[in-house]
Image (cartoon, rainbow, N blue to C red; front, side):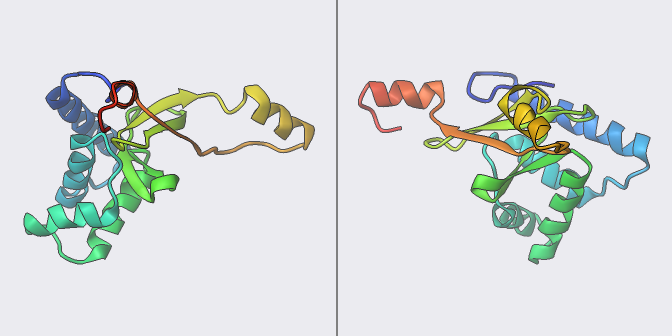
Length: 164
């Protein structure tokens, strides 16, 4: 599932599809997809902005699913460790994975104005990083790539002189 939140899409279908893929993956791997874990993923899928643990905790608290930070952090740790979500280092926040069940090396395009995040698939074995690693005799196992900029909507707003 590749979703570009910078452009219009079937958001309800995006959420439903993401939850179904997570359910299938958890069932196939024998993982417990508890109601709190499911709800945290649903919250992440409901936004294409990265959310902090305390943003998620506020929703869980309002819904009676947990009031203490460990509730959110444990669910987020589970989702990240099983490839259902990613941590956005720059924002110290989380987004739902848009490539669930696929081995991939994501790069994150973060709009500095609206805070929406796009997950793009990259190849860490190609390009200058791979050449530098090869030259150093280094094997890349994981990369974290984040690019901060402006999405087309915010860029158009800036060009028109409107606040983004």
